[in-house]
Amino acid sequence: MQDNVNELARDLLTHVRSLRDAGILSVARSKSSFDGDFSDPSRGDGNADGAATAPARISASARTREDSAAQLSAIERELVGCELCRLSRGRQQIVFGTGNPDARILFVGEGPGKDEDESGKPFVGPAGQLLTDIIEKGMKIPRDEVYICNVVKCRPPGNRNPEEDEVASCRPFLQQQMQAVAPEVVIALGKFAAQTILGTTVPITRLRGNWQDYDGIPVMPTFHPAHLLRNPALKRDVWTDIQKVMRHLGMPGV
Image 1 (tube, rainbow, N blue to C red):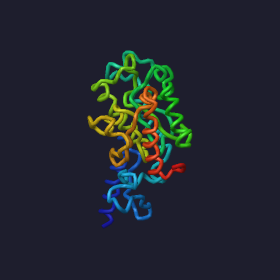
Image 2: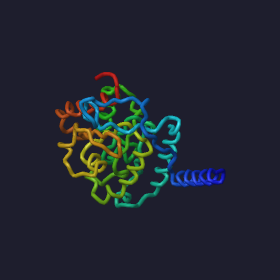
Image 3: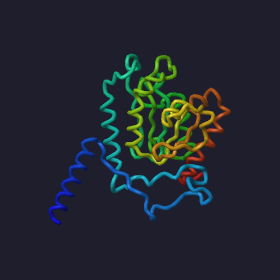
Image 4: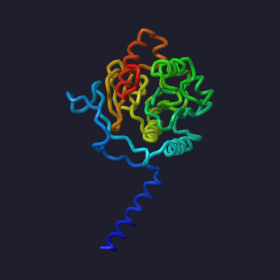
């Protein structure tokens, strides 16, 4: 019996070391009866807003802010000098992401513009100021308490739309960022973010305002702030979408 126990312990240690070497620093736990149930009794698969009820997030004891920060730093180091697509030829800086590495909310945009390419930070131009207003004036939380990144990490020339192969080159890095942050909700800003995350070609006009799912994480697609600058009347629609996120998270003010 003792030999069997020792063998099992050795196998478990080997497995844990292999996970660590692969960069996996935490493991999700299954939901217990003490985690609470926020679903609408009238729906078996979601809450009152129609959001899929996500599996319990990793406990604080198993996953810390430092774990998330370390994983994000490792991903960012992997991107140094990246030349996987043509966008690398014209960039000034790789725009990785900023914010709380253990954020409850992850915003994903399309790609850097001129201001972001110069600063190395996402959403710092006019569209970024509008996003900051949505977060701080609307949601009533500091911008640095959310995490913000883009689908592509280098500026497309002339701020054109990223092409399919460029999105494909960056998609694995975005997916790793999402896994590292492990947010409670992802807000996909615009067509490219929503379609890339969800793996769909459904137009943003049909996706926005409707809860989606990515690997057990509720996703709320909405319009990109830059689109709102050109179409101010759509701000009301975006605020409706943001309020759905706030209700899902139990935030005050809705």
